[in-house]
Length: 297
Image (cartoon, rainbow, N blue to C red; front, side, top):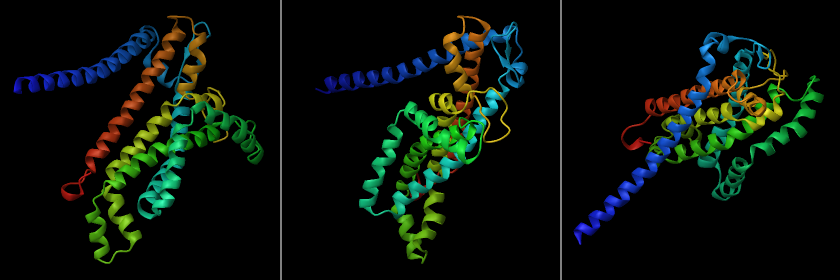
């Protein structure tokens, strides 16, 4: 009887190990393919010119593959959308966990989750059809498809991610910490601000980094709402072309194994390292601010 139970446990363990291993193999395969298709560009085009060149004319002869305007556009859109999404997402999570009545929480929470379920193409249409004419009229902009438009829509997309993870972090703060703070005479607001949020800072920091990762890798929204101009932005109303938009817009027309084709995969490598950096930073923040003892998260 014991040997049969041991055999089942081994089978389950090996099965779970195989599933986890297949995920790692799939990731490794994607990364290897990305580097195999992107690195050939640098056999005759310097990395410095690729990263800091200001001209993106891939169909010229010879082609110009400077992605500096695309890189700046991606960073600008991510930074501006994060400035809008982080306070909104974190404060919404604080309201749902610390302030809202349970009935109110049950009413608001599904709408936040529904926002996360909206396809990015729908939000892109929102930016094109509703936000673009409004921005053009209110700010007297030459076009409504610009950096501001894309940032607003990306902020809307990032809020559910930041809110959900921050909410989980706030919920995981031990009840004893809240009760001890209130017992010492602190108000509910002081307890939230000085006890609960610092104790949940690890999870909140992770939520912010993952929200930024979502923003910098988003394709459809920036393709539809950013304007598509490969120029260095000088104002919020300038049309821009982030890196994911260039890959999506040009991959179908790039000749197979041409310099243009390899350059688009090289952009993917840059995006890979940026996303990796955000995830490593999220892990560092989570570890640095991890609480010990009864306040462990």
